[in-house]
Image (cartoon, rainbow, N blue to C red; front, side, top):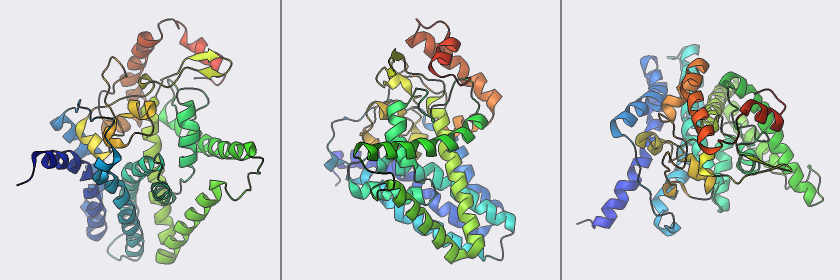
Length: 377
């Protein structure tokens, strides 16, 4: 007979493995073609939105002091994803590139679905891995990011985003009234620049040039080149193109989530270029149960920025009193972000209420933002 403690532990960890069900879907889509090609985006975006409605919110919190020794199955989840994504991605490149039953459009659609999965799940798992102290886990995170040609995300996220979130120095913090289609090209350009600058400045403090071999960008470039070369070897030019299609979709998935996570939220400037410490109120929180299973609690983003080194099962949920709440989970909110008028109608009133709640002393936000950042907002 299974002990109650063991049963409770399995009941808490198993739902987070639901993301692994997406891998067979991309295989089925490629093997079947036709209508099956809609399965990966349909399940990732729409089914989990429906499940959020069915399962509701999870307002419970695990003990944040739980030792790592009790989290082995949670840790195994993120590590196991890496080889499975690698095999799936490159096997499909080999198979789809020469699949005669798939038209050119169907091949594109198949790898659009792959990109939905490598972006929604793969990059999210790399995010969990890059925050850990284990060198092996950080390397696994690098492998996942190289598969989507976005390796600099590690440097940008750890050295820039977490330090400057909610300030004009953070490219990833979406400005109030900034639509996604303005945000996206800006972020693609500025994130790479800020990541490289941050690594260069780290080396300068050690009196080393940016060309020093310890610069992680050399590792990033080597890993990305190896992934692209492997795609080329397995599928020729078609395989390389399909690889880039999924990478582009994955990057878009990442950045639309980044757009949602901090839209319109601003840390107060204290003078002399200093800002108030990061608090739970500087990220949007979402307690929706099913999408947090899929995204390993990424939607508990308020606590992630407050305590960046916490593993995902220990991230805490916050109520409206401590952190702003999204009306829906990421599957719905990311779709809304792609429709700027709808997004502004839903989110701008919430940003204004947030400002009145936490910073009632600031009465002219347009002037305040302009003083902090001369770029129009």
